[in-house]
Length: 266
Length: 299
Figure 1 (cartoon, each protein chain N blue to C red):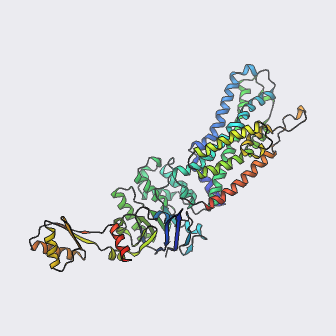
Figure 2 (cartoon, rainbow over the protein chains, first blue to last red):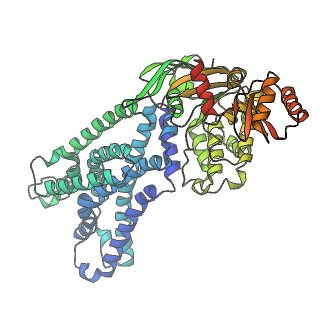
Figure 3 (cartoon, helix red, strand yellow):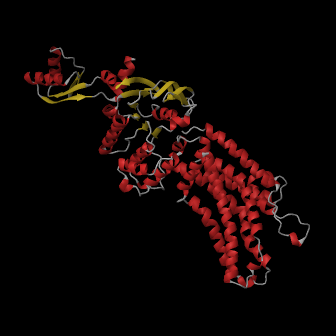
């Protein structure tokens, strides 16, 4: 456990000056600012909206692209960036001759990637709420302050986080093996497109395909409330696609551990 | 023995890279691991560090089996394999601090190491901007960071200028003499190893050709006296008449087995006395290629 904590801290120390780490902060900030500016400049068209619709518009604008494009691409990038630090510096050999168990080194790297995804999604929640409330201050005619959906937002993003673990584990393993960015990137990109198509066409087995999970997470997030408008915003976090995503993550993570154990550093 | 291997073998695909290797590295030695490029030196080192799994054979370091005592063995080894592995986007100091974090070494040790390899002035420069020699020195600092009992260095003087080479050599000698370390150092340069090693292992095509102390090696390597003379044929005949064995004669020079400095002086005096013009007379080491031939032929 000590080796894991040391390795995890080292991962942070190594990456804190890289784009891989800062992307996790800059991406939600950038998209948040973009939306803020959009809503600010087009506020006259939005004044008539009830506060709940305003929030749904505001948060939905991000969530719409999140499931289909931003999250899978971001995961492909993060999985690559934590591994490429070692590929570029040729440091696998020094990592694996540290007096630290190999599983600690491997697990710390994996969980650091998971942590970055979590951080990024948590910041999306924070910035969505923050910029929404900021809009109600600088444009009081937009009644963002008359409705609250902090809990629902947190649930949606938590669901997205869980549904991204399957992709992350696969991309992590691909990036561990190939130093060349194009391979994991290319495979990830094709699978993401396939996933989006599968999920958006409502293919019945798309819940088994990890690259369809973020998209499926968005489309399956609302509980079937039988048209009761009072329960319109009940979030269903643990749907079957989320369970499949977590199961794939566990299986690939454990399989990856055995592969790393046997991996020779050439 | 600090390192003992028995029947150590490793293949890449169909190529036998290490072939039934039996290393014996005594404590407190500087063990020079010699061989031409591609002889299997780096592969052997990776086997010793458990980065590669041997196809056959055993490795014992500090009298412990590497298979069952990996962590405790690795915690006492500092290593530098091929070109130093540095995070280019971090400064020299940050590279050391990162490793100090992993090895739980006090940060003061980082400053000491920077000082030792004379990188204090460049400590805040990104490692990617370092010259080859500076990278190599930082790699050595990283290897020494945890104050290991055994240092395994793969061609550590690659890319260093003559001053740098001397500094590293003196540093390694000091570590062994004053701090009781053991150094396992690979090289393809016999001259470099002879200047510091106490023990030598020579490997070619993955197999050990010679292993022993430097004195043992010198008795095999048989240095020569090279004489450049105006008329080498006459000079050779003169020497032969005086029962001095001449092994090679060309238009420019002749070669005689080296025995001692006195013998060199006597040869010089003899040639001069008999009217032979000597341009130069020098002790010449056989190069590694010839040494290999000698060792393989005698084996």
